[in-house]
Image 1 (cartoon, rainbow, N blue to C red):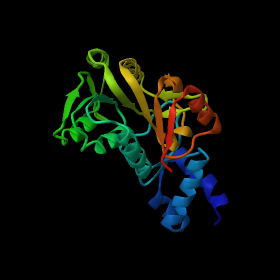
Image 2: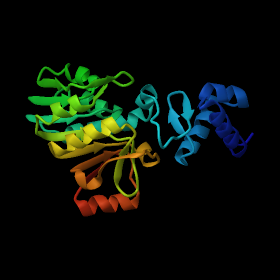
Image 3: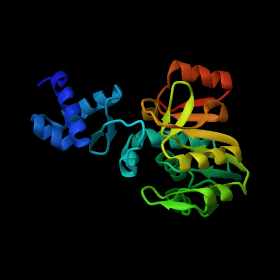
Length: 253
């Protein structure tokens, strides 16, 4: 059976069940796991599915995919982005890292940074940076989001307003071709806007899967950034916008 025949049926199964798995599809079609992985990658490249660990889900413009699935999505690309971003963060500075799997990857790359004051509303980031003895870690107040260890709400914003950060490292759920940075959770967006206001420089870390996604809430724009770290070239329009706005664009591959 050719991929042109499998693809429509894979999409139909995804619409029916909400998710497809590599193992389940391989058994259903009687083909190898590698063949199904190629099918899912092809469908993801065209925006018809989103890859998650072990399979794929239908893309949504109103709801984010689960945290554990996001954590496993393009892990190698996120690690490359994190290395490049961490290399640009100097010793002896104050920094904010917000909610997201990409910012968590940056934290992993900062374990040898010296004399860092790190503030975060991400419990996973805090736990990672706690392993660095030369990093003072401050965790904001706020309502705990159990799904991903994030803290949001008025108390979070109040904590952040007490600081002025040298650098903020933020993630996002989507980046559209107009250069708008987008997310799903309005509480989280409100916190991120305060982070941007309280930071001298803002670094966005977002892998190429965010170029194909959509989300309903506008966080900020490219004009609010000092640098943008990603793992694949964005559209020519975004490249041009970065150049015009003097946003340093770093593509790791």
